[in-house]
Amino acid sequence: MPAYLKKPCPMPIRTAVAACVVVCGPAALGPSKALAQSCSPGQAFAGPVGYAAGSFPSGIALGDLNRDGTLDMVVANSFSNDVTIRLGLGDGTFGPSSRRDVGEQPQAVALGDIDNDGRLDIVVPNARTDDASVLPGNGDGTFGLERRVAVGDQPRDVVLGDLDRDGDLDMIVPNQDLDVVSVMLNTGGLFAAPVTYTAGDRPWRLALGDVNRDGSLDLVVANVLSDDVSVLMGNGDGTLAPQVRYAAGDVPQSVAVGDLNGDGEPDIVVANEVTDDVSVLINRGGGTFDPQVRYAAGNGPFDVALADLDGDRVLDMAVPNLLGNSVSVLTGVGDGTFAPRDQYGGGSGPGGVGLGDLDGDNDPDIVVFNATGNAASVLLNLCGPFCPADLDGDGELTIFDFLEFQNLFDTEDPRADFDGDGALTIFDFLAFQNAFDGGCP
Image 1 (tube, helix red, strand yellow):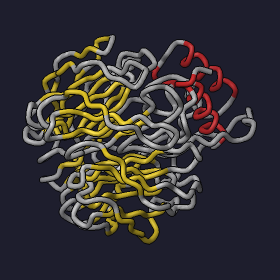
Image 2: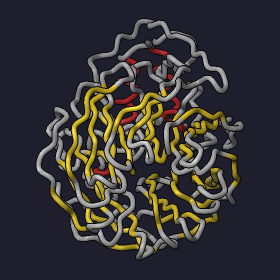
Image 3: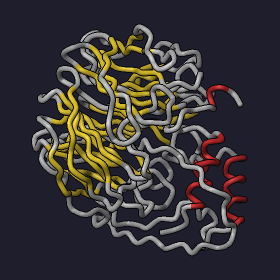
C-alpha cells in the first residue's frame, strides 16, 4: 500500500469529527431493518444546551479521547490560557469538565494522533507565545505533559494532515501578522522547524483537502483583510506550491472544503463576517474555482462546517453567527446550490462549530463555542435516525449495499467517501464496514 494511504487512525478534521474508524468483526450479510428519517425545515435541531468552559472560548473540536466509541469535546479558552475537556456520555450530553493549561492566548484546537500510538492528542496554537501546545493523549481522556512547538508569529489556527504522505500528521498554522502560513513536518512525533509560504492579507483560518485530486493534500486559507481565499497545492512531499487567490466576501473568517455538487471535486465555502453571508466556490476541475456565489447567513458568521445533516447524502452547511447568537443551517440541494437558511439559537456569541454524532443515532449534531458566554452549546439533530450504510435505499442492510458501495468506489463517486477526508482510499472500505456492522438505530 502506498505510504500516503496508511493514514494514522483517527483522521483529524479541525471543527468536525476526529473519531477513529473501528473495524468490527465479519459483517452479517442478512437484512437489518433501516429506519426512515423525518426532518422538517426549521425544526431539525433542538434548542441549545450549554456547558461551562473557560474564559472567552476561541476554538472547539470533537474526538473520541477515551476510546469508548463516543465523541468528546475540547474547547480552547483564550483569556484563561487553557483548554476545557468534557467526555461524552453517548446520549448527547457531556460529563464534568477538566482543564489543562496551555500557552498564552490559545486561538483554536485540533485533535489527531501525532505520535501514532492510537490515542488522540491535543494541539493548540498560542497567539501571544508564538507557539503551539501539544498535549499527548493517554487514551483514557487524560493527557500527559505539555510540550511546545515553535510555529512562527501570531498563529491563529491549526490543522493537521499528512502533507508528505509518510503516515504522520503534519501541522500547519496561519501567521496573521506576517501574511504567511507555516508548515511543521512531523518527524516521528516531533515537529521540524517551520517553513513558510505566502498567503493573503491577515491569514486567519485554514482547511485541508485534495482539491486537484492528485492524491496529495492541498491548503485553503481565509484571508480576513484581503477578502479572499488562498489555495496552495500540495506537492506530496510536504511542500506547497505558490498561492492562487479567489475573491470571497467581506472579512472572511473561516473556510471549509467538501464536494457540494457530487462531481467528485472538492469545493470551497467561506464564512464572511461583515457581509453576513457565505461564499460558495465551485471546483471547475484541477483545483481551479468558479467565482463565488453568496448565500445569506445570520449576523456575523464566524465559522462554517460541512456535513450531511439531513440524511440525503448531500453536504449541508452549519454557520455560527457571532453577533446574532444563532446558528444558520443551509441545506445543500446537490448541485452546488443551497436552500435559504434556517436559524437556530446558538447561545451567547457562537464563534466556532463542530459537527459529529453525539447521541449514537447516526446523524451529525452541532456544537459551538460561545465566546461571550464562556461556554459551549450543543444542538442535537432531530432529523434522524439515519442509516448511512443503506446505499440501495431498500430499508435493509444486505450484501447488495456492499455491491453498491463497491460500484460507487470504482466509479469515484464522492458518496463512497465514508471517512469524510475528501479522498477515496481503503479507509473508506473500513468506514463503510463499520457503518454496516453498526446496523441501523
